[in-house]
Every structure is written in C-alpha cells, then in structure tokens.
Image (cartoon, rainbow, N blue to C red):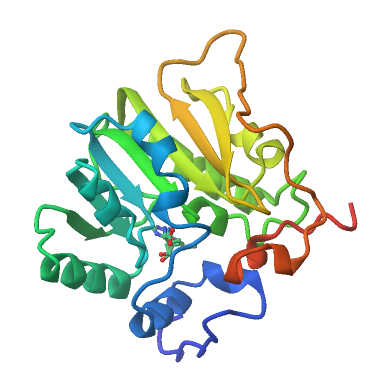
Length: 251
Ligand SMILES: C[S@@+](CC[C@H](N)C(=O)[O-])C[C@H]1O[C@@H](n2cnc3c(N)ncnc32)[C@H](O)[C@@H]1O
C-alpha cells in the first residue's frame, strides 16, 4: 500500500502466506545471494535434458536467485529469458550473470500473471517453485479458494499462450498431482500431462506439459512407484520447503 512502510520479514517467515507479498521477496533478495528451492539442478538434470532441445528458446518464470539458468546454459541451452516480479532479484541476477560472462541470458522484471511476450514465442517455459507460491493461502487443497484458482489459471493461460504450438511447459513443484491435475487438465489447454518424481526422502514433482499433445485418453505416467506420504514431518523436507506443505492433517 502506498505510503505504508513494508513490514520487515524474517527470511524464513512464520506463515507461508508471506510468500505472496512482493516486499518479502525484495527484502529477501537484497540480503540473500543464492537459494535453491527444493533441489538443485543436479537432481533433475537428466529429466530436463530429455525434454529440452539445445536450440530451444526457454523462458524461466520466477527465477529468484536460483542458478537454474546458468546450469541450463552450461548444458548448451543458451537461448534463455528469466523473469521475476522482484526488481531486486532481477537486478542482482543481471549483475551475477554479467560478472560470470553469461551476457546472452536476458533477465526481465515481469509478472507471471501477465507475461509480456507475444503469443507462441517460446519453445519451453520452465518454473521451479513459483507456481507453488500461488497456493500458499489456498485453504482446503481439495477445493482451493476462488482467488487462488483464478491466479493459477491466469498463470497457466499465460504460459500456454506464449508457448509455440508444440512447446513444452516444465513445472518443478512441491504440489502433488492430485492437487495440480485439475488445473493442468483444464479443458482450455491443449497440452498433455505427465510427471516424474525426484528427490530422496521427499519426492518433488517434475511435470511435463506438451502443448498440442493432449489425447482423448490422456495417459499419466509416474516413473517411480509410490507418491509421497501426506503426513510429512518438517524434518523430511529441505530447509524452508515445509512451508509449502499442504495442510491435509485435518481433512
Ligand atoms: C519459491 S521462489 C523460487 C525461486 C527459484 N525459481 C528457485 O527455484 O529457487 C518463488 C519466486 O517466484 C517469484 N514470484 C512470486 N510471484 C511472482 C509473480 N507474480 N511473477 C513472477 N515471479 C514471481 C518470487 O520473487 C521468487 O523469486
């Protein structure tokens, strides 16, 4: 709100809804140089390289201060654009990439709910943990609040729009398939849906959505057998990830 001094947050906030406040991210990125949500690139590298062609144009949504774009670049995927809502994250990312010689990677301040790109512009859109932020105050995960649903659908419609006709959306997420599937499978989208899991104790989800590939009998694949337990303890999760934990205990 204009004229109101933003609250000073702890880096690991007491409640997950703070992740929806852009001031939180600005404050955090002003102090923090690198934080990798969920897991670093090495944990899902094989999954990414199976899906992304080296010539692909790639948009990373909600880059924060992650090293994902550098790692992709190192693997030969060099046509990269990163966006984040936080001007602090964007400025620091630009400085970091420039100082390391990654001058071709574009970094822009932009809202994933209002993507400033033409239709059918990218071969691939990738995000890690950014869509999860939209769910932090969703209420009952089986029946999310209307505002959550609206924001998630706005984001997905934008991603679907900027993808080329056979483009791929990769969503690396904490959110489990039974909560994500209703959004990804909305009738307005033409993409197919598959997912993989990665991680040790707790499994994170690697969703692959291929535009124009939805079949009438949509087949879902789970590479590893077994979904993670719904009653996780904080100790099973890395660092702050437990704040994205879906509160299903009372359901
Ligand atoms: C959980 S962090 C993930 C950061 C990074 N992708 C990673 O894996 O470490 C969520 C990121 O989304 C960004 N973000 C939140 N809302 C956004 C929005 N509406 N548009 C673009 N970025 C947003 C935050 O600034 C933050 O960098």
